[in-house]
Length: 337
Image (cartoon, rainbow, N blue to C red; front, side):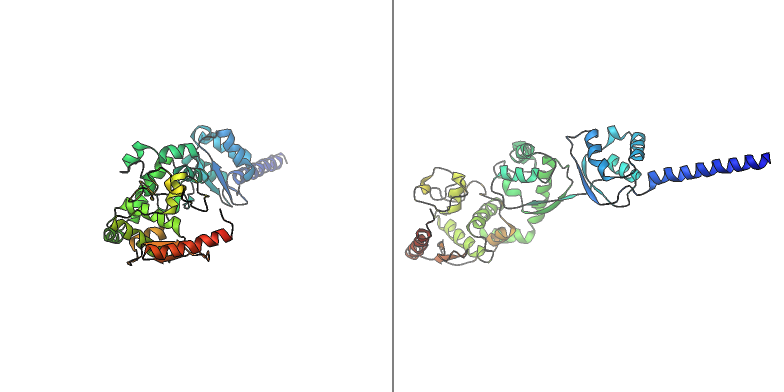
């Protein structure tokens, strides 16, 4: 009878140990994530901030804390963008944070006119702040490293969507953009560029003007052809968007004669040739439009009074004046100042 009691007691203890082990195993190996979510942990936060962000998103928190202590996670975690997927256990989560197994983010750059604007857009998509990005975008040393002049560094960026680790530094961003620039300039694009007689930097600058003149992709090669004709004849480009850039007044709706005298190297009414650098980040459609410029004998163009986004083109100044008067009359009729 005594042996039976001892045996039953032993069996009960074993059962309790087994159940406890299974419960403990479930805490460490069971699903700690029910709903997918993104975790953005900045390099400027601390371990307490990491836990504040993580804990509301997971179960088995005591098990996670215990495993984190074993990993010395408080001193070894890596900042970054992490995706918590349903079914992940605390061990996988802990290792992910310790090893810095980030999920890349998609970074889009387009519709940018000046480096400060680009810095602001990047700071909303990556961890570094806008001041850090602007310092990198205007750094002479970094520009020299990627074989660019600091003034022309802005012409290196090709609008697109790229994958980056969220913690990529501004310097890493610039170096990556140099590699993307080299990929963009294929042998075929360079062959077309030689047809225009322009350098890569000049193509980007002219493309920025074309991009600001028209957003109609099918019209861009014709606009580019006008500017190529003027450059080859030694005529000033007389591009209205360069006035807006020179004055840093991008909301200017009507260019008046007084504006044309604004003193700036970017004013293509008083300076011949291309401005010193791009006046915006041109889209790929504008870059390819310059490379595939239309061969014609137009020297002028003016927005249509129909305001449909297209332009009337002219071969002579007289024809251009007639087009300009029609457009000006429509501006007056619509009371556009």
